[in-house]
Length: 186
Image (cartoon, rainbow, N blue to C red; front, side, top):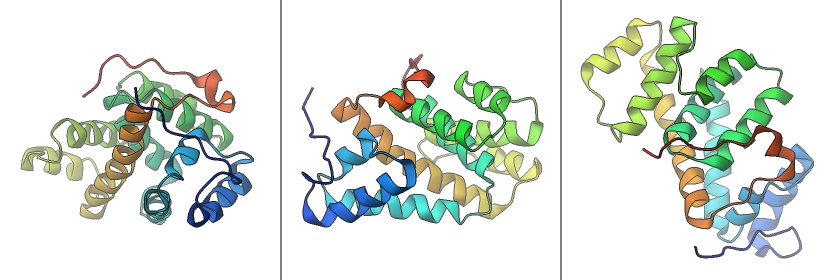
């Protein structure tokens, strides 16, 4: 596996340093993945920009995490599932729902299960979901905007999941209590 440096604020390219400083302020640490992103100022800026955009979507924090963790489970990403599970605990989100997502479903709430299942379909089908799947999702109480916001979340996780696969990102100590062993990759 090709080794990628996990940059610190001191070792990062100059253009990446403000993003690492922001991550440290937000999380109290620079997560290993963000340190790897810093190798390319364009990647760290793009990833964090997409993340900020997703936070402005119509999806609630729990719904966003369902999308992000579902995509990461489907993509077999050990790092993102552990990291996002830890985030959900800090946000005091429903851990019964999060555990169901980590397990590959189902979630007992039908509307949230529709979100999880639609996200998985988007990942598995690489966006080529059928009209029936889109209509089933909308029929479960979601909007057309939410369809697009799921795609945004999947795009965000595609970046991080793929970087983790390529770089073999080690899970930070802060996330290890929520370690995840993928069953399979998509």
